[in-house]
Amino acid sequence: MTTKAIEREPIPRNCLSPSKATAEDNRRFSDILNNERKLERESTDRASKLAIAEYSVGRVAVYFPLGDPQSDEFASRLDRPNDIPPEVLASGGEYQSTGNRFVNDVESAGRIWRSDHALSGSPDDDAPLVLFFELTTETAPLLDSAHLADFPGLIVFSAAPALPRTELARLFHAAGINLDDFEPSAPSVEWTAEMCHAMTDGEPLVWNKSDQTIQLTEDHMTDTAGLEPGDEIDPEDDAPTALDLVKLRTGPREPRVMLENDIITAGHVTKFVAGSGVGKTVFLADCGVHWSLGYSALDRGSDGRHRKLDGGPRRVLYIDGEVGPSWWADYLDRFDAPLHLPNLIVVSMESIAPLTTAAGAQDMAGLVERYRPDAVILDTLSSFIDGAENDSDTWIAFDNRITLPLKAMGLTVIYADHSGKDPSLGARGSSAKRSKLDAEWTLTVPRADRPNALTLSRLKDRSGLLPERVNIKRRDGPLGHIRVSEGKLRLAATVVSDDGDEVPADGKVAAIVTQLDDWDVSTKTGRPSVAAQLRDAGFSAPDAAIRAAIDYRRSRDG
Image (tube, rainbow, N blue to C red):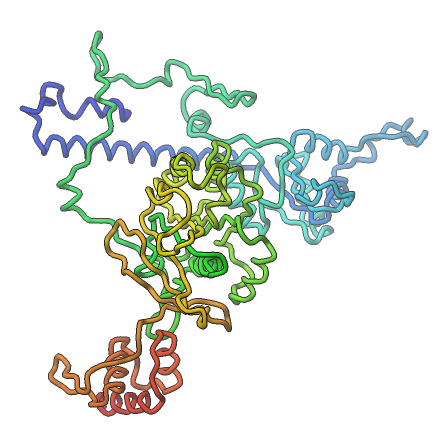
């Protein structure tokens, strides 16, 4: 039974009037409908996976690192000298061998994908390529182990050009190859749920590759089960379902996940505004690198290590409209980032249409579909529009095409923007820029003599939970950022704990003891490590006070 049928089945029509339908009826109806929708989605997913698995059987891809000469020699295994006509042998005329014919047929069918280097106009014929073919009795000799041993560097794996791009990317990655380095000679077919259904159950649908349309028969039309002859469909049946406010308040709530405590909430739209040269790009790039590795950039534990993110590493799509490739090469080295960052994808804005246009929205949708990010960072906003910054229509179009769709997907969205003449007033341009933001911060350098002492000041906060200000210190060796607590360690001369025990009379020593207790630092930790942890947290204290605090905690705890 389909969802349309379920919407009419559970509750009789004579019980749908306000005077007869109860809250329990409505809850029951909602639960049944949601469960049926879930089952339908799961069924479609299973059908898609089954169709892909069945389609992949016997379909092979071979990666040739040395390009055409290597693939031609590889295919020569199919040649049968006895098949060459005697008159051709006698005259020395040309003859298309079985191997050559195999390669030509495969290429004509669009099953040879060449690397970007081969498509750039370079005369080099040795650029890598991937050749797809079906395993049959005729092609089986190509995969003979003795034959493969003659071609070191070849990679053989299961794949087919008509598979969905996400599945192809997974198969190429498993083989150690980057799908993005290769371009098909003809566009691959994008699979849909209807196509998978046609391969696994029911009558085949007509797939017209020329106009990318599906022709449906009456059997594929909306199910009208449960309707008597002459009944009309109530248009209100397809209206959006109202929120169950009681369930919202009494049921379990989605946990609030912070990528950077008190600054960036996962799933929210956050903007950082700063003047030129303050360092917003360095800050956001630092965050992107750490998130892709599964860590917070600013938050550290008692051991001084970066806090692990709940849920593990995030896929970060950083769309750069500001600095360019050479900057990334330089600053990733300065961050001391790992050479391989599989979860950090940096894309240049040069290949993207203005995001206030339909073409730009399509480009963004393509990027999200291709890379499946958890977080999207746009740096900076002014690089991605084609209208005036002071025109509210520009930002209404931008939010409708970009901000709202990304947020609806549950993605974390980060924008960088330029400040106006007065940084405290936020970004330059129309106030419509702020309408869809969950949070907005301005990044400033309060003191010219301390260029690495940064301050984030809150400009907007829908949640009402973010602090007014966060202090950050930028440091080298390697380049990074740390959160800084305001002021120095200061407490009263004597402090009494909850157990009634007194801490040292010296205020600085008492402050260090209390802080180390809060961090649950082991009493075996030596002075250099304790001093480093205090320094990283933004506290300053003399060595004598640190030693006294360590001695006190050791004597107190035995």
